[in-house]
Length: 109
Image (tube, helix red, strand yellow):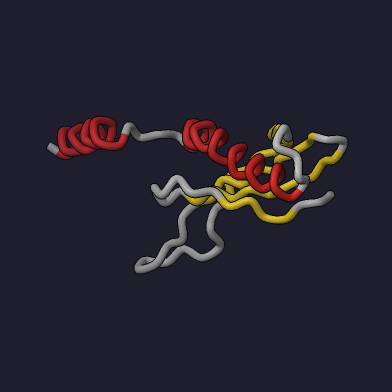
């Protein structure tokens, strides 16, 4: 009976959420991270033609995990933006909270 219950739970997980792996999730967030970095880079570099590329990516686990509170995992991308003979690097953070929002923080210029 117990293995049947586990099988039902596993099927439910696949049917409802797709049980997306960390790697799949990070790949799905990459375009949003690039868009966030490009938008900021185009403004800061004053270059509407600036383009972005991912230099590095990593999954960051929250440091504190508690029963009542757990911060979401975060995909962290280092993205280079270049155009108009200028370039900048941004660290883009995308939380795994279902929002799809990414934040482009300062990197190096």
